[in-house]
Image 1 (cartoon, protein in one colour):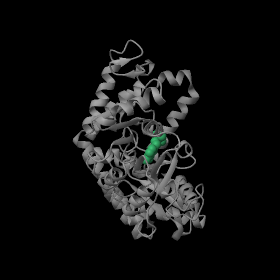
Image 2 (cartoon, rainbow, N blue to C red):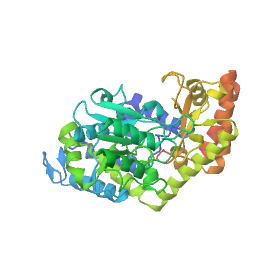
Image 3 (tube, rainbow, N blue to C red):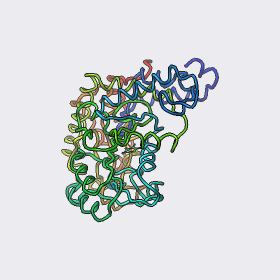
Image 4 (cartoon, rainbow, N blue to C red):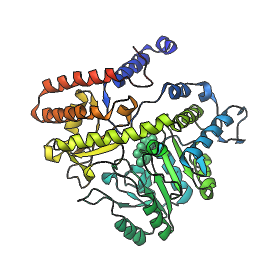
Length: 417
Ligand SMILES: *Cc1c(COP(=O)(O)O)cnc(C)c1O
């Protein structure tokens, strides 16, 4: 980064500081990861200088000799990896990708059904504060209070009563397998388009560690930067039937020129995700999350739904008598980075909820094995107790132990110092 350091030492110093922070901390936010050097290099290329509104072979600007090939590679790899007929790799991120789905299939005021935000759904699934819940009529399903799981009979009853045109399945704080065939049956029955939003679990699906929505969902929406371990971006995949509607909604419906450097990095990430090492990675992510869940449960932590099938754990801290935000901030001081999160039927407010959400994608990218989850659970336990007791000494001690583990497992994509 010699050019950056010369031109803008302030930003260069902050980038170096962030590299150090990502190297030294145990990053447990389930939507985060470490991309490879190859993905990082692709995002930093001159491909970003090019304008290319349109699609390969049908552009509004000349000079697409290389860009068309880049985007075609990304499209073909996406189709092959997720076994879908069609792929659009241009959405700027997950939220704009979902907005394109609304533009493709709904008129303002039409009904959309999704999981409620406090139950684990995403803002863009028709939740009130999102454009998707103000310009459209959102009806929301949740999970059962006793099981922490979706009751598909209730989803079906709601769909029959409300007749949504689009149904979203998937979410952002869902620790259990999504029943794609079950949702598909409901969508078929009410004549709705089924959108599987697999933003969180795309890498698990690619690696065979979560069932695939292919053959069940009409549209698959995903970010590329979570478990898939690519650059910040998104993709919309679909059946052949909906290909045209999706493409027209993304461009010219919603976006202008695609971010070609990101498209290139998506292509690289898809190539990496198709390899045997990534399969092992995806399975290890789940094994690590399950091991961590068992260790936390053994220390009296209450896991929403009792555990996990995927990469994430949603922890209700009410029983520990520590608010989620207090725990998250104490963990951050200990070098363990999580986010505070609402839990289903939370009695506290969204900005000060009862839970924390943790996940294993990033630590697994460092090669940290399941055997280390005993220490991780012990640290979380110590820090949550210390947060309650105001014991900063313990927090400082844990920070040193975390750093030692991080030093033993260097992260991909970071410079070696
Ligand atoms: C992360 C996420 C999104 C949005 O992605 P952004 O890139 O943050 O806009 C959409 N849906 C789900 C389920 C997500 O988890």
